[in-house]
Image: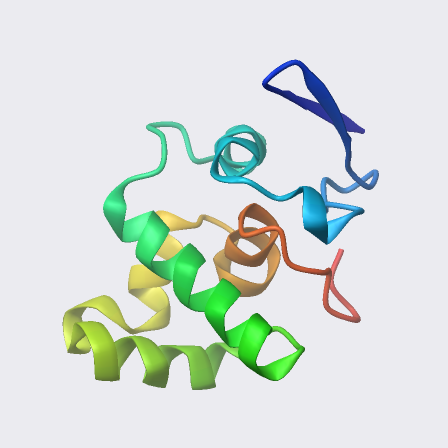
Length: 112
């Protein structure tokens, strides 16, 4: 699978995960989101989740587990923007499968 961004071809896995994490960009995130049932584009709320997920990965070297991520979101954005229901409202297949994919993070073990 491939995505084209700014005239460049970026390789994705068969399931749509970024193969070279260094190739991630906001433009690529927008392209990946189109394949992830995010039909109205990425809003600031999407970007808040994407940026928090990327920051956690940079700081810890691994993707964040959903419960821990909810706690991070609650601390920074409040209760209304932290539970799994909220995250699923923005990323239809959830944090692990959808948000992390759009954020250009590696596919966690056991995730298709």
